[in-house]
Image (cartoon, one colour):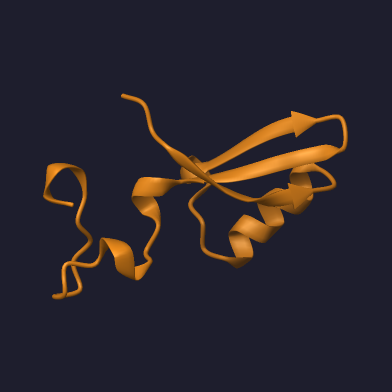
Length: 67
């Protein structure tokens, strides 16, 4: 199963990215880190985001075909 990811930002190293994720309550399993020549690019799995686009109006997150 493949997941889509949203960009979360650029960091100087993996430790900085992991620290940012911990401060923002991002589960380490949902964090994707990619090494670049300038540091690390972080992304978060889309299905775990909690913004209003995924709210069904009753506080439940909608996923898959019900979106």
